[in-house]
Image (cartoon, rainbow, N blue to C red; front, top):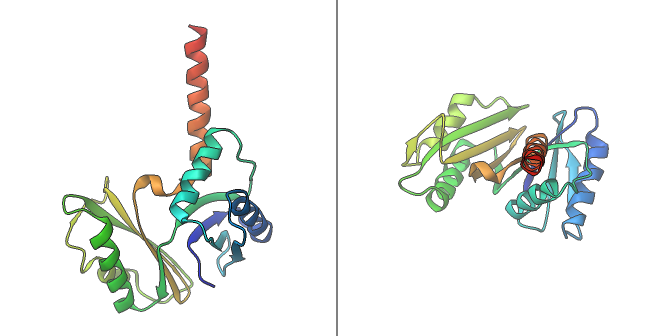
Length: 187
């Protein structure tokens, strides 16, 4: 299955989480989302006809409005390209995406997740970074080259920090803002 959203969910609840994700995508306007479990516990894959980066933005808006009624979805990341677990393909895709999305004066880091694969971590990082002619910053990079290896499939994206959503962190931000607003009212 092709996918453009990589979704972390509560372990053991992958099947109901697929229904939850499908319902969420339909609520956001996708008339035919595809959602499936993966070989990894706690991971589901989704394909939406919507722009996955816009989906992330809309989910954050729902959370801030306190209208997020889903409980099994924990974290979402958009995926821009899915390729075979071939180092040359990974190298080409990372290079192409970096050229478009990482400005010359910006820094990057690679975030790599490997599940059910024999491809070595260092080989993946070397392939991904070899043609990206930008500075590396492991602590506060401007962009994140996100690589998710799941068996023989590799999902790749170049993300800004705001391009992914952790449901719990967003809810905490919302609750803290509400608390601050209440304190200001009480003054």
